Length: 300
Image (cartoon, rainbow, N blue to C red):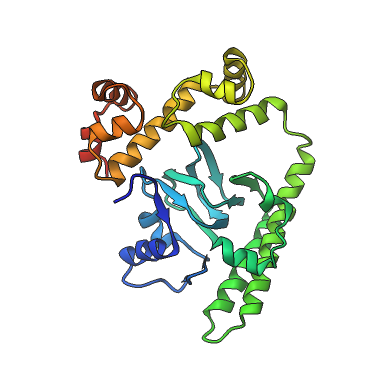
């Protein structure tokens, strides 16, 4: 078992699909390098489980076809509604929180190596940025066009014999269409406010260092800011204090270890740099209303 979010590889995705149905549905094609889904209604129960935490190993481009869902991407909760374009990079941590019964999506997942090959190592600007996830609401016309591209890719790879060059060309078209939409976002939003940039940098650091560093002073020093100024910016942008974001990241890490590793509570407390196991247990219960052992035994 692992002490990190479950890696959502192509093999694991296929196993999730086939655990829900006896074999892979015709609207899902999974290869060793990429997968394409035109209708996910049949496997949502296997993939969108409340409490499941996945870490992506590949690029994801999706479009919400219907319904709505709340998903936590790298600590930040996002509301996804019909017509929303979604882009995710390798390393993104995804935690589905809730979804309506009619929630459905279409999209592709590509391994980094295959995507580089399809693009001839010429990555568009959107995919070269440090951004790990992005969303944009499309018009109905724009949404229909994206869906047609996904269907074309699905129909192509579903043929017993098909050209790899054609497949790569369609994927390349999809990627550049995504870049077009997100480049428009970048242009019309003008420049990110300085406060927003500070907040996003803070969240990035928290995601990477929360296990070892629990205090705002560490993050402020890394960003060459004062504790007070950083705290004010984070609260202004997000409505939550910096400590609340650190707590959220720590609790997420603890939940992952409790559910996806065989480590004892003592070992987890030590790895998360708590002074004593008693302090960790009290901290965990204060934020979740459960002890670590209760969470491990009762939460699916």
